[in-house]
Amino acid sequence: MEGSVRLLACLVCILSMGSYVRTKRDTTGNLLNTDVHSVPSQHWSMQVPAEVSAMAGEAAVLPCTFTHPHRHYDGPLTAIWRSGEPYAGPQVFRCAAASGSKLCQTALSLHGRFRLLGNPRRNDLSLRVERLALADDGRYFCRVEFAGDIHDRYESRHGVRLRVTGDRFTIVNISVLPGPAHAFRALCTAEGEPPPALSWSGPAQGNGSAAAQGPGQGHGHQVTAELPTLVHDGRYTCTASNSLGRAEASVYLFRFHGASGASEIVLLLGALGLKALLLLGVLAARAARHQLEHSVTQDTPPR
Image (cartoon, rainbow, N blue to C red; front, top):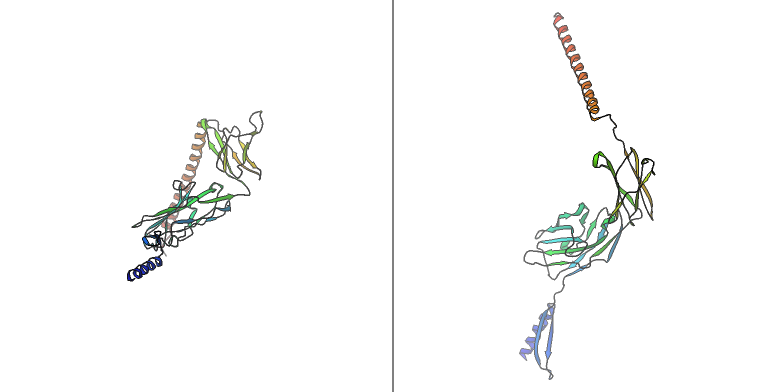
């Protein structure tokens, strides 16, 4: 009887500590053995929404909270966010907190646009993304790593989908660059969803049409078209269009048409010679004025 009371008291202690007891009995009801299995109050988990939507140019918050099996952890930790795929995708943000510190110091922020909004000490890894671009559209994965005596780490497998939408498109770059054989070429890059179609127009090429179509190359939500040879001086216009509308941007090409390289050098030297003569004239005038003032001072009798 006393042994049964002690066993019952022991089982009550175990149950109050968050464990469970599995008991096996034979057909006659006699106790055979008891297996005690520890059941932690919490376990590793990540909570993220399925999708977050935001407009291009604005900011978005990617929520992420987690639980871990330790009753209390105040050691070193690292918070990481990846893009593309879990475990192997490129990191876009990383911060580290020293043992006992509540501050997670940023070690990586891609383009300076990613900032930790949550507090990892409070199981919150929420991330804020500034100045969203259409290229930011994709899936992101949060991860936490414990160090020191406890080497635990956990990462969300499915992640959160960031959907970046835009009600318009823009021409993000247009420029004239030097090409082969002292020629010039023009580049035009536009961004939009759906990706816009690009076309070039400019001064007439001989007796041909004034419109020139450049080869387009797509990269994500961006499209680039090149005008390989600019024959005439004047205005060159890049036109972008998709189902949302139409946009234009222009560049101008004006080249110096000298007789020859030698004549350009002569003109340059002539300009420098003129400046030198003017400088000598100013210096001579100052010297004459100084000499005149000195002679006047010597001829004046004392009072």
